[in-house]
Image (tube, rainbow, N blue to C red; front, top):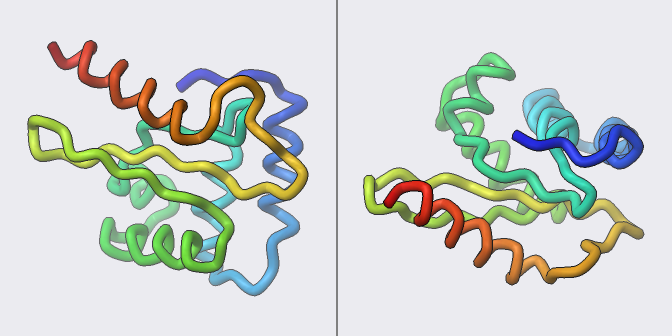
Length: 121
């Protein structure tokens, strides 16, 4: 996982820590995602199982927490079914005032998926 700049990660972490009205699990997952966010508030390739292991819950509990974070508008989830049946995810943190520079979220997802397919070939 590539980190862009410590300043941006610090901003993402500050935003994640400031979020209220979240369960402990939701907040733990959000903080972990923020620690991995690049300068566009984008996190790629974190599986639900990896997140679950890191925060000490089941994969299904992590999935519910991620879906609730999306429903609450804290994150956007992009799932793409791979040839192997796995569904890796990419996430955007909806940090107010932060905009992706250069490419749109859709362009970023398309590039991410294209890169994944190249690596699998």
